[in-house]
Length: 278
Image (cartoon, rainbow, N blue to C red):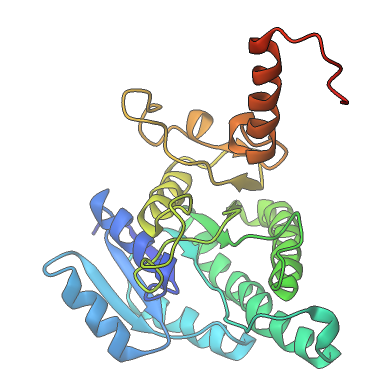
């Protein structure tokens, strides 16, 4: 029996991209989500693909433990686990909200990742194989205007991933975080999504690549857009497809730098000796 890839949050926007990417790579999938109706729809979308649906949640320790037992009952090996778990939340300033608002957001956005890791990492350790990947959203390094609570949660998830990466060594399981520094283009927001936003499938492809070939000592990996056609790195080669958390973004990806270069270019092309400050 082929080892399956367990995908938490499989019916979410990014989770669907991970499911498709995993199936495209020939991985059997165990899709986990809260709502059985959404899981049934997901299974129908993939026809005769090797996909098993398991209703479950990791919103608390008790639910995480129950999910672990359901997965054990499947009696099949797992190649890895991808946790695409993200809560919702309205837009607004953190200063305009009571402290309880942030507490609730962390309860819904961050702590499920801990509950999942506590109860599902042992599944991989028992099997003696498999890698564990968390997927994080934007705002972890710089405040996301209007979504400060999401920035705080994303920054906390980055640290949680580093801690899990270190502590999971004792279990002989590798934990990584794929952090995506901008919103994802999904089926629900495609009409108003920016052309710069990565698709859920592109994120899923990099997530599957990290499960297949995780970097040895890099806990946090930044999502990087696929290379242009004709310049693509070797398929699923983490060393060329991803950059470590500390790697700066490509200079041309920063609009302000592009604008400065264009301005300097205009001055140099005119040959003017006029003082720039004027």
